[in-house]
Length: 606
Ligand SMILES: O=C(O)[C@H](O)[C@@H](O)[C@H](O)[C@H](O)COP(=O)(O)O
Ligand code: SF4
Image 1 (cartoon, rainbow, N blue to C red):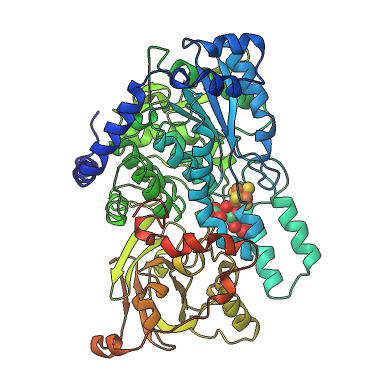
Image 2: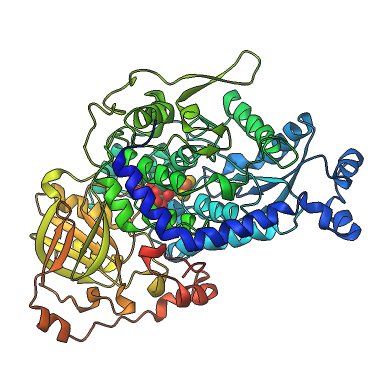
């Protein structure tokens, strides 16, 4: 079934816009793939180093060119609850590869930052740049050129985007992403947020807050809100990098291990040595990217993907824009209500029918391209399934349920929660920005109020504590862009602005920084481009200027006479404190060359 004509039209314009980059990219991928089994170009010395620690049988296998070798790129560490389960994956993958007659080696590790640990801390200023660093680090592992396919172990915010950039850069290799699954449900996310607001109002102490936080984040697996990490899982499944049904199965379960083993064997099967060669750079095309954006809108996914998905697409020579994302939002309905877009968590989403039901519904209505290649084969319809554990300990798949098991969490296309998606582009005399409306009540989609200007999120929180944030206002938090301080998430503002909103004040946020995927109910125009430090109009806003954020019309305006506004000298900020400390001195080159937010805020692509 072909996609909705509006989806087809947007896809066609992406194809047209991308053509020069995409053709060059595919030429390079095909040339690299044409070299055949890559370790055969290595010298005996190279090869001996490459398999020095292998068993005699593996050495014999890798000395030839028939047995496929799997490169494992792992982002294991104990800082991310979502990545901690990866500690044991290499051994499981090696065993599964051996059972399938192949070999698997850890090609390399990549760094992984937990945005929850660094939220509101100096380390957060390294967060966005870590995405591109992860891509580089994965490239170092793969550059050993010992491999016929790669499996990528990653879940969280910038890790999956960085790994996708690497996988597409090494697009001549098949790539299978292997997740670890969500944490089991703990203290509900809205209850955690309530205790945070009580703490901010000095109504509970640190002990009560820490108890609530620890009951929410309590064990291995991805945090259960629908932030960037779980948006990543959705993307990997709907773009065909995951095995069907892999995204939201909890860690440490037999089904989780069965999915990991199955992914390993599938990765070996789609190498050039098999008969279903599926290089990542050919598998992912403009339709896959559009399917990712559609999934983002249908689930109310993270605003961070208006940065990451653009960078990921660019790695495959595909030029995706905010306008594409915004126009798709006008077409695609919202079908999931998962915190912060609702009260449910991803475990509830999965139990309600999860990715299989979502994909079935979106395919049924023509919102997805079905004619795409995936690691599982041809056609996205294969993903309209429910993953189960078979009696033999392997993965068994049943068709996705006809109806949602919980229509309050997962709706069908006939009765969506909203007729449009969650992410809109704004434009006007302050430049361009992005707003997530799936978590904002309709009566707050338009805000017109005077500006209160800050150069740091801590300044705003201090103003709150001093009782200075009265009445309606638009908080302008600027000098938070990629070139200024690495574009940190300003998620700590959510609690304070949420308190003021709950008191009845009409508040909004306007920033050249970014928010967490877990940020929600306060209207926020984020990723403002051009950023303040790049001479963006946001630097010329003054205290008290009237700002109008209109998510319905898609406009962002400062209501000041144009000539007077243009004549203003832009504000300056002392960013010397952001140039060192907690490793920030290591990233000065990144701050210097980072691209604009509407092109992915990347140091890799202009
Ligand atoms: O984009 C995201 O989804 C966030 O970066 C998320 O990964 C981060 O960890 C949040 O900060 C956690 O939420 P809390 O800070 O509210 O615990
Ligand atoms: S979802 Fe966020 S807080 Fe949770 S483990 Fe991942 S990065 Fe850390």
